[in-house]
Amino acid sequence: MKDLGGLMKQAQAMQQKLAEAQERLAQLVIEGTSGGGMVKITLKGTGELASVELDESLLAPGEGEVISDLIVAAHADAKRKLDEQQGQLMREAAGPLAGMGLPGMPKF
Image 1 (cartoon, rainbow, N blue to C red):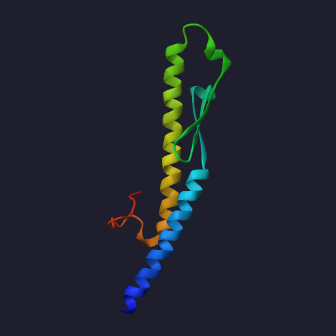
Image 2: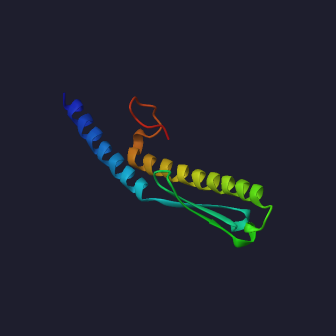
Image 3: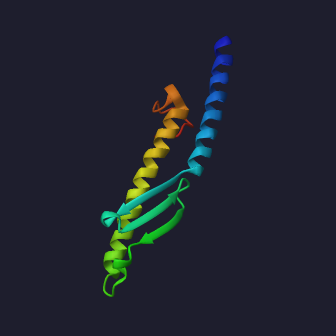
């Protein structure tokens, strides 16, 4: 039964680390860009869109489709960066159990 007690302590410690990692994730702010910086998208750690910045040169008539494409590309860039940060924080929190495919553990 000693092993069970030790496992419970490890599980509680990991649960605390995961909660702390989720708090850090919520505070993240990630920027994605496209068009050589002509479009900038800011995402919060929760995935919520915080801001969109457009270079004024894009605001010319007939640029609507270009703007749409650049916004989508900037969002994809920000989302990729956010996913990387989330995975890294969760792997750090899970420690040696990361990637073991244990039931109830997030996959990252």
